[in-house]
Length: 414
Image 1 (cartoon, rainbow, N blue to C red):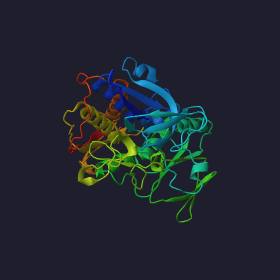
Image 2: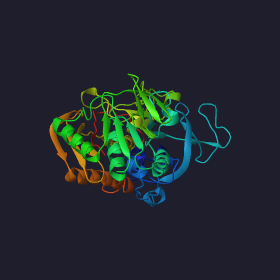
Image 3: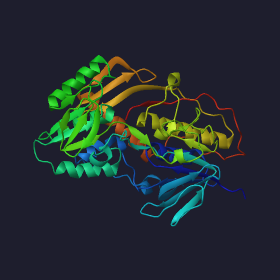
Image 4: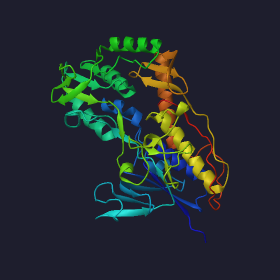
């Protein structure tokens, strides 16, 4: 009897969960064993962490329910190491234990062998090495950080200042969400450039209108060089008072890949081809924030749900195609828009070129807020129903090494 082909998916964010479900639909469960490894037992809607931070309750999505009947085995554990040459992953129980890569598992650790690995460990917040940011600032890159901030915000008195650092989409969404939910607080935003300077004139105009309406103070062209309890210091020596500082200035990938023999970029992302396959280890695929994916004009895709979901589709379909000896998938490679929530009643849909540069067209106001909410719900629905609408399972054959075809990713910012 032929042994099952072992596929391990690391990480059950948007990318990992979708990839696991799509693989389960593409391949026959008697021929493949798919294991999804994640530290938490339920799905986290990362694009809603600013909502969680202000006290909104999010829908519970247990993986045991989402993957019931799919054949995907769930393992709740923390990944501590990967040996890409020996083809095994080291994990420990999510609540404790230690392990490492390369020298065998440590106390309480377990080794999981694989034939194909899908690396989807994603990213976390990036302190950018700014002194005091890790010690004194809050982050909303994940649920633990959002819950800590939620507790802190709930304890603030009227008039106290919350300073958000970072003018990207996360910072814009956080500042407006905080201001709408807590109009009694003094909300401020510090950005290195101008407010919304990557948006179109229409988009920037609407953004300023919403910020003015919500009473948000904006410190433009302001680089924060130090975070301390009760204030931050800027590059020109100015001190900005803040009862709470929220750091949203970028993301950093999980450090595990950089500690392996996998080829990674300077950012620690795994370098992949157009099918999300590692250039150095053909049995490893990387998706989502963890992958360095070339977009239109060879411009790297940005870390976002917009990029992560299509890379999951691409990897799952490529793995299934290689195992079944069928044609590798090709997909149009482009972005369409950036979707930004500005509280629960306002939004901004900025239409973009294929390589993610703003064009003049933008959707604003209440309709944009509804659009953004539909995008978020659609992304979560896709995770909760990863196997619907796909072709019947195929039986794997002896693996064939086909020449990778040009493939691509399409997406809308969630």
